[in-house]
Image 1: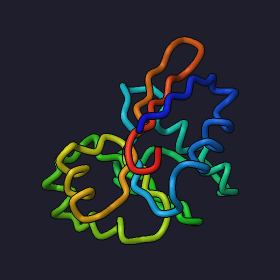
Image 2: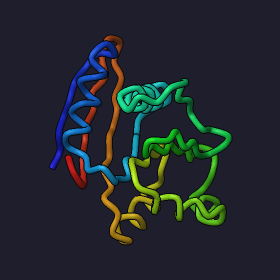
Image 3: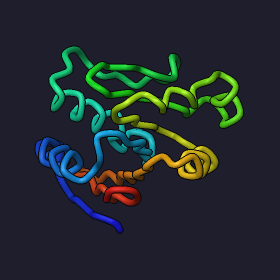
Length: 140
């Protein structure tokens, strides 16, 4: 099933509320979109909705941020699937909560699904005034 939401940045809280209604408490969520499409901006809004203090930033060089309150954020832009597995990060998905993955490969997605994880895909397309969120997969 696919859900589509079109919203401005000012309406991002409504997008997050919709996601929280539809996606289970324990899920892997792949965020896809061009550079500057709003992947990290969406993560920041989710963190705010959970009462997480401090700024959520992209973990480009650290690969993962654990924000607390069951929220984990990965940025796999600069590493291959093989490097991700060699670093032992796959085991992190065992932790309860939402695992938000930027730049996750199709290979990783298939591996997660094969291992029984609920994987949701959110594709983000940016225009000048709003974002188009296409939510597909496990709980959409």
